[in-house]
Length: 143
Image (cartoon, rainbow, N blue to C red; front, side):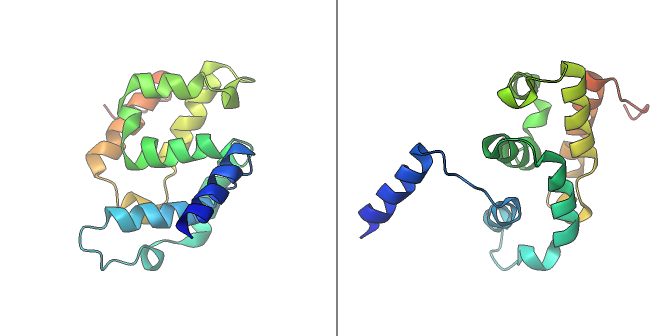
């Protein structure tokens, strides 16, 4: 029976029918990050602020949003300039200049809702903001 479910999932992926629910994806990731397994991410998340935050990326692909959230924010890949450059060169940013893309990413990282910020190390978030600020030239003397 699991094989049939797995095949169905593969078919959906191959057909391009992937629709992610960013809030659900975030809850699942935070559950995995919880060290004791007793923390309920839904209790700590302000759903309206998370949805408002995600609305900045409603016109971008699911893969892009997942990459920015999971790899960029939660796994701190915004420290890695090569990661940022690969995002900016993606099809999702084809219509904007690199400076506009860096600025959008910078604003996204700077506007992380407080409930998500609690799950991220302050120094990692600050480093992500600083790297993107340098790239977007949006620094405010925080260095």
